[in-house]
View 1 (cartoon, one colour):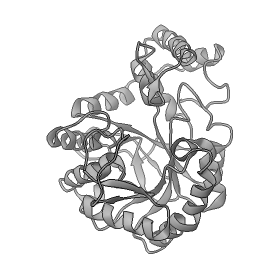
View 2 (tube, rainbow, N blue to C red):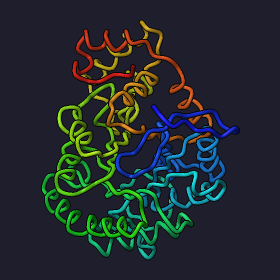
View 3 (cartoon, rainbow, N blue to C red):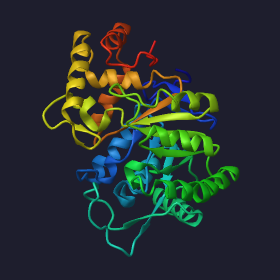
View 4 (tube, rainbow, N blue to C red):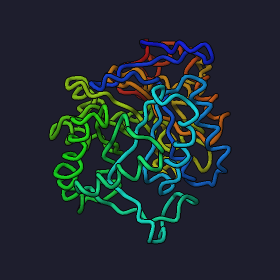
Length: 347
């Protein structure tokens, strides 16, 4: 870990280089899906205070998206970033959807509050530029640091549509983002998806600076280990990891109602997590602390992006990163075949 923060007003939080972007990002990023009223409504004060607390504790990476609350998250992020020097924040948002203010929300969204606008899936060049313009207005800024093509994966669009969406993204959104990068509107471009295989496809199809992968490299499962993470190292792609608690179960443990991939965890996942918990308990390490430290153990990973509903959750996440994890924990997890034997672990 390199380049620690030096502000006298905040604890140091290590930073790492983010691929080829030239940016240094805190090893803990602030994910703002909860600020879009994901599963629960937040009042503005609590939402904005969570972001402010993250900044005060040395977090400089802010990840958002038009999808989060159909614009609400970006509005709240815009308020938060206006309270700190803009150059102190690495601001990341996404493209692939723009918001139609003349259409109702529709049904089926996990964002229970948010703006009353319809999300329009659009990976075209013009749709991407429209999305970027809307984001700049909602965020109240004249530049973005990172732009990611969002949700081009089977999880979102289904197997029947993925080839069409991939083609649209490379022929439209990628061309637009590459232009914005060349014009220095953004420092880096990438993708944000839920599947390691799609990261590999994009990495081989274009020149990307960073990728945000959710859920596929965690203490529970490591499908990104075989191909994507080595490829990221080879190409100099800075990796951000989301979903390192696999939608909750690595934070709560194998309790009744534990979530995995946004659904109730199946029995085989519950059983594996329970076994991981027992090893962690033997070393007196909380399960979520082990999950956070493990995710940062791979050299391709620059930052772990975690959401929070309030300042207290931010404080817990920072505290977990500040604690020590004995190397014997990783050895025992591998010995019990609960962790891929090839997975690098924190020193």
